[in-house]
Image 1 (cartoon, rainbow, N blue to C red):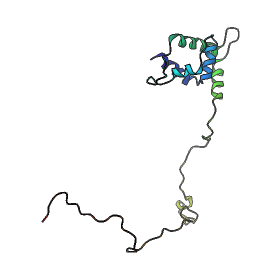
Image 2: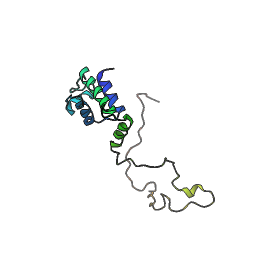
Image 3: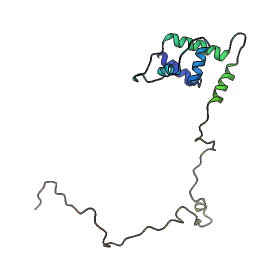
Image 4: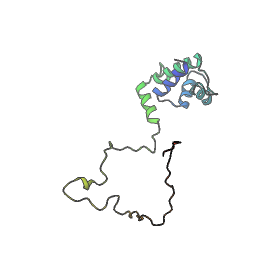
Amino acid sequence: MTNNDILKKLRVALMLRDDQIVEILELVDFRISKSELGAFFRAEDHPNYMECGDQVLRNFLNGLVIHLRGTKENPKNPNEVLAKHKAEIPKRETSKERPEFKAAPKDSEKYRGDKKPSGSGSSAGKPKKKSFPKGNGKPVVVEKVVFKNGKNKK
């Protein structure tokens, strides 16, 4: 595993955003920009990919210890810090809290057995399709073609 892989896995496991990683690195007086940090998380074949050095990873791990545990004078509970990270993650607006999905038939009365299905089904208000009798003057799009495949039959 490379240093980049370790950094990526820690970011995902601890639910850290780029700005939080920059703050963690500043705890140990190591300054890095978000764009430099983003270069570590790129794919190896990307033109702006940058190899994460030992110094960056070492400073990140030291800063992470201070971030999670706190200092000797001001100790923190790591579980509370991680819970705070989880609470800061914005929830998606499109995903709605919903009970477990259970497929129900379209017309629930249809499957009851004691009554006839209601007329309010999906096909109740639709107009019927027009039917054309054969030979109504509709143009033929494709003609019948006989394929001989190069064989002469007598």
